[in-house]
Length: 492
Image (cartoon, rainbow, N blue to C red):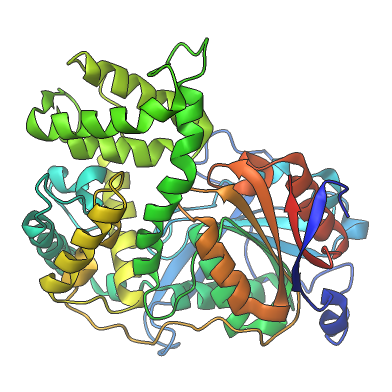
């Protein structure tokens, strides 16, 4: 147990008590049914990384119906004599891919973990180069400040409702049959198909951000096919709201994180300093956003081609994901104060944006039904704007799901404490995207199945990224040995 941890009140049954009841693992897995070969289009991949294609049903309720392809990758365990099994690297999103993660973040894992596990990456259904979807949206609708439902400067959401209807209609029309079969339940079933194809009785996993929800749903649907599960930067599992709860979480996530930015942005010697004291940064940001609401600055090459208040707010949200991004927001604030703009930010290829947006819309909207009444969002946005001025009502506003023409095929999964006690949550205390409050709700839902490591750090993604040495050591020890802290812990 790390000496820098202090225990909290919650306790959990040791994983060994339930995992020991399962059939023992052997050093070698059952031979896999995947045809592994070289990886195409993965520049910079580790030469040990192999790739394969897995066929899964488009509709798991019709297993003999149309099949789709999933792109899969692996780097085999580095010490075959100590091999324990497969560690699935579950990406964030929806719309993210871990196809190159065995070569990327997987190589940050300590040697003792890489020795034991095949590192498994994949592109989820809908994400290229797996069977992919696209919406064919107008370029303007691909702007992040448009896809995030920022209200008009006066608080009106009429434009957001119109955008939601336009995007939902276009995605439903152009997304084909596959867009109706994008859901977290389907992602979990795909993972179990992959487990079987690999010849594994159980899998371990490291899920990040949206990947924590996929990992939690898999652990609920297939509890006795799980070995060691690490969920990093955790989503609120509220089965009545699902992604609505994730969006709403940005209110508190910004409030938790902005003071850290303000301290950095006012530090003496910082070349991107925007104020003399931390207390001045918040009112400065709010004044700049309000001024840009009234007087946008042309921004050639950006999308949209102006710096307005909502573009500044969206830049704030993006920049708070990790401290290394703070200079982006500070530079934009300094430029806006002078009435200028920096060079337009680089954007991914439009084909990538089309793909990621379609997967996000399809998954979020198929997971749970959103209210269809604009009155619901008007009321929620007004309340949010009054209480959380930094986020200006966006987190409770209407997304395309408010106008999605399809009903969810299945009810959302309710996470419970039924199953083996083998889940370790790791969570930064200050996380703009998946705030601590939502992570605590997932911890509560898992009950005795989980313990949680809360890290005194700032940023999204905790383990081996924006956390601290104490948290990293605790998770690495669990993956290597199966030993978790006996209680929830705090890593200072």
